[in-house]
Amino acid sequence: MSDWLPNPHHHRGTAIRQFSPAARIEQDHRFDDHMTYVSEDICHINTYINSSYTDQKQEEDPTNYLIDVDAFKGDQSPAEIDQTALDRGLELVHALLACAEAIGCRDTRLASSLLDRIRARACPSGDPLQRVSHYFATGLSARLSLLEHLGPNNPLTDTSTAPLVSADERAEAFRLLHQTTPFAVFGHAAANAAILRASQGADALHIVDLGMEHALQWPPLLRSLASRATPTTVRITGLGVPADRAAHLEASMASVVEEARALGVRVDFRALCGDEDVESSLEPRLRRGEALYVNAAARLHRYERERLKEVLRGIRRVGPALVTVAEQDADHNGPFFVGRFVEAIHYYAAVFDSLEGVGRGRGRVEGWHFGEEIREVVAGEGRGRRMRHERAERWRRVMGRAGFQGVGVEEGCMGEVRRVVAEYGGMGYTVAAEKGCLLLGWKGRPIMMASAWRVHPSNSSSST
Image (cartoon, rainbow, N blue to C red; front, side, top):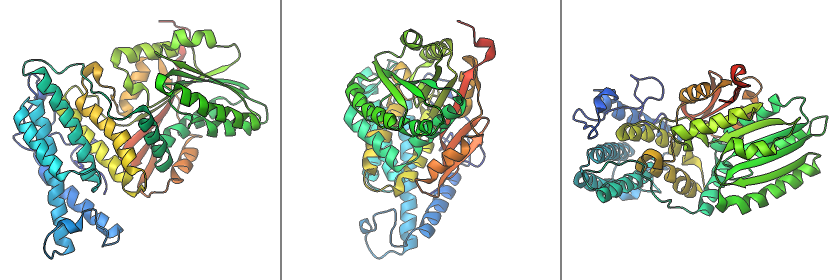
């Protein structure tokens, strides 16, 4: 299936804003001023799902349907079965949107009734739409519980929900994601290629990894450095390492350090737990003659706006030679819940479609990794929401305003990134360049972005 729920009347990646002429708006907000209404939306959804199932049927063995054939009673032809699946998909989409709108209006009774309908049709082991709907239902349920707890007159602000997975489960899910899909490796490969290119001629490197939780990114970079004619020394500082991952990270990096030394690259690693106060944490560890690189892999979206400004200001002040950024290319940080919800359906439906070919471990990737993300996007609000994904163009504006200028990663990085992505197979993955960024997509839908930045010359000596 390709391009989940597309709207041909909008720019690439823009979500359908309304699913029924009577769509309600969020209470206490002038939602009309911020939403674009589309009258042909239901027609577009029907057209999309019909074409998607037709494409899927042609590509797969005709006996291997995305639906549970045994669930249907009587003698039905494949065409009849496909139509039933289409109807199921449409019912799920409509119920999800109606439930989100009911929650936005604080109609808890209607929302609860719709959630019962969704749970009856969604399934964590069904087709992609059934699976992603299951996790959206979990998020909607969490948000509904928060509303019921607050009461009808209290605003839903700065709220969050406790994680449903442990730190070990989260780490295992990421390891499987790294092993079975290119989503994480894409950003790692782009950042490593940019660092290699920027560090030509340097024999001492200091890499700062913001929010470091694993050691998966650095072995390929160290192997590439080992192939250089002159010996290289590398210091890696994990800044803001979660306390519950510090011991595991130290053990993982010990193996990386030993492998690098065997290749002739001297590596020193230090994990710094606690707050990611870049300037105060790094200044005592900076050394003259070292080239400094700051790596932010799927990290910057976790900061609320004012905190993000502080972090970027601190990075700028320590004067890195390069800052590498990898983020999910999605618009999950809008001010209104229903709009954010619709954008999230588009994004994660494409992600779950891409995971269809993943074998063992798919349930853990979807449940422990993406399922938790979906719950955060749907249920969290204000400062309590940790998932604030933005589109590539938004990150360009954020970095520019913070005093950085883009370093085009197309030249010298595109070939390596495409090679790494191709190792995962899958005909649906695409790698493209856009305004200095690299984009990883699934059947044309952008999923991840990677970029590189340096301090703008006008800010290189500024301390404000």
